Structures are given as structure tokens and as C-alpha cells.
Amino acid sequence: MPKLRVHNLSVSLDGYVAGPSQGPDHPLGIDGEELHTWLFDTDYGRLLLGHAPTGERGTDQDHAEAGDANIGATIMGRNMFGPARGDWQDLSWPGWWGPNPPFHHDVFVLTHYPRPDLIVEGGTVFHFTDDPLGIVLKHALVAAGGRDVRLGGGASAVRQYLLAGLVDEMHLAQVPILLDGGERLYDGLGRLPGYECSRMESSPAVTHLTFSKIVR
Amino acid sequence: MPKLRVHNLSVSLDGYVAGPSQGPDHPLGIDGEELHTWLFDTDYGRLLLGHAPTGERGTDQDHAEAGDANIGATIMGRNMFGPARGDWQDLSWPGWWGPNPPFHHDVFVLTHYPRPDLIVEGGTVFHFTDDPLGIVLKHALVAAGGRDVRLGGGASAVRQYLLAGLVDEMHLAQVPILLDGGERLYDGLGRLPGYECSRMESSPAVTHLTFSKIVR
Image (cartoon, rainbow over all chains, first blue to last red; front, side, top):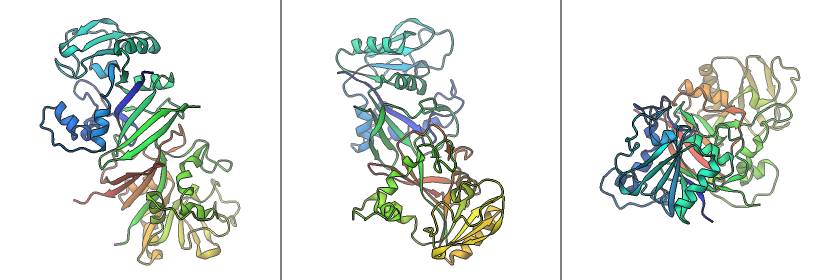
């Protein structure tokens, strides 16, 4: 059965997936980029940024790569796509990633402001939808053609899918820093019923926590 | 130089060191005992509870033991000592641990309601003090006679000593569960200036995070 998977969702020790004052000037919130240093220090991250790989492996690189394995479509919240709020103004803007986003498949952007699909370079197609979560997942599963769907974030989208019990697997990368503000992942999840931590391992930079659905 | 050290401070993924509704019926808050399962599963914890040791070692046992090594005195907040609030009523009550507490040295209990010392079995003497934090530390260092002082908790006492820059080392045991309420460790610490995570390792049960003062 294809799955809905969260990968490499970086979270601070105090539970924030982005720093305070998120917006055009601070896409990740103030100091939020510190959440992603571990990823950009891997060869996976170096290649994303156009740097030469080092050839080093390790648990961080393994987890970074695992996020793309067998993924056929992506779902994300609107703020993951861009800084615009409310009615869309610039319909040609291709998202934070520039003209050739690293997805190369269908991406479903959750928004209360639907707009036409955006087709960009490299096979990425952004669909903007205000359908219910389960319907969006269904469309994404069809688009994925038998492969899994990745839930890219942010916190709100992940929370909503967790509360609906639709997430099959969630990998968090916990960075041992405090951000003291921003978007908190855990608020409103209660005790996260139906899920348990199935795997936990630390690198020098980050602790990888994998949550799975409890099988009864 | 003798140090002020925090050890085995168990914290949930959402940052709570005790569950909600802490009080006589729930000394650790509702579901708060889940924070300490990892400790009671070690031989250190088994011996505390009067169970036979298993002979197994590992990072959890190492960290459990390290909390007692070279410790000559303890400081703790009032709620760590007992459930009473306001004026003390029963002056003979020996604390949560029963008649022979596991300290066997001087314990300084931070309280706004001073009372006479309480001398119990096994060499433990409880001092109840509303002196400023630095003065309490000074008394504890003298009592420790050259050894280190352990800061036992709870969250409020640890926060106050961290904000004063008086904690030299802090070991957190992060349990991968959500408690969704209770006493949150990180609130009010800002970005924890002056400290950095110097060591991180995971067992199957818990992630051990050690924070040290940044040396400039």
C-alpha cells in the first residue's frame, strides 16, 4: 500500500519548525536556517546548493536521501510554496526553489485561494487546492502512480494530516537548539494518539526520530 | 573547580518535565511517570526500587550513574521535595523518597517559606532556604567539600540557575512522547545564550543531550 510520509522535518528542541517572524525577509523565520544546517552539510544538501559532494556518508546523509526514495508526488502547505498570503498576485512565481524546483512530479499546495496549475521546468506541476485533506491525498496517490506521497510541511499541514490519522510515517530531525518562537509543531496534537516513536538515532548534529502508526 | 550539574532531567518531546495536574495524586503530573520509565529500566533504577539488577549496561545506565558521580550536595526546587504549597504543615514528612532518601548529603530546598533543617536517616539533611540562588550555590559548594553540586530540578529551579549562568553542565534525557501539558522546561530561556549542546546520543528509549557552557 502506498504511504503518506513526512521526511527531514527539522524541529528545534523547543518544538519549532521555523523561527519567529516568518515572511519574505525570513522565509524560515529568524534564525530558522539553523534548523537546516545539518541537511546542507550532507552531500544531499551540498548537491542541492550546487556544491561538490564530499563522498562522506552517515545517518544524516541516509535520512536526507530516504526522503526522496520511492516518492511520486508531494503535498505541502501554502507557506512552504511561498511567502504570499491571501489572494495570489504573481501567478508566474515558481516557488522558493527558483525556475527548476527539485520535485519533478506533481505537487499539491494546500490553500484556501485556489488558482490554475503552475507548470514549471523539470516536470514539476503545482496544483493549488482547497479540497479536504483526504481528497488531496487521493489525488496525490493517483498522481504518484503506485509510489508513496511525501508530505513536505509545514507544521500546520503535518498537524492536520496527523490528526486525521492519514500520515503513515513521520521522520523528524531534531536540532539541539532553542528558537524561542515561531511555528510550533506539537501544539494541538494532544499526545499524538495512534503513533509511536519506532526509531531514534543521533548524529553529532541532530537526532533522527521516526514515528509510525501503531498497529493493533 | 567544582561544578553545578544537572543530570537525568527527563523531558518529553514537547518540552515537559512533568505532566499536567501535578499534585499529591500525581506527583509527576498525569502520565508524567512515562518520563522516567527509561531510568527505572536501568540497573540504577532497579536498585532504587529494590529490584534485582540485570547486569546489563549501556548508555542509559552510564548516564543514570553519572548523575551521582562526585556529587557532594544537592539543590532542588520545593516541588521536588514534596506536594505541599504555602506554609509548611507537617514538618516531619521526609520528602517523596520516604524515611531514607537516596542523597546521603546536604540538600538545599529552594522555598519562599523557610523552616528549620530536617535531619533524616542515612546522612541526608534538608535545608530550606529563600536565599538568592548564588548564595544557595555557595552554601551547597561549601557543604560539598570540593565535590560538585547537583541541581535536581524541577523546571523552575533549573531555568533560574540557567538564566543566572550558574549551571556548568546540563544533561537532559529526552523521551520521544508528547505529554501535551504540564511544566515546560524551555519557556523563558530565550535561545539559551551561553550554552551549547556538546554531546548527543540515543538509546532505543531516550536521547541524551548534554549542554555545556560555551568557552570563549
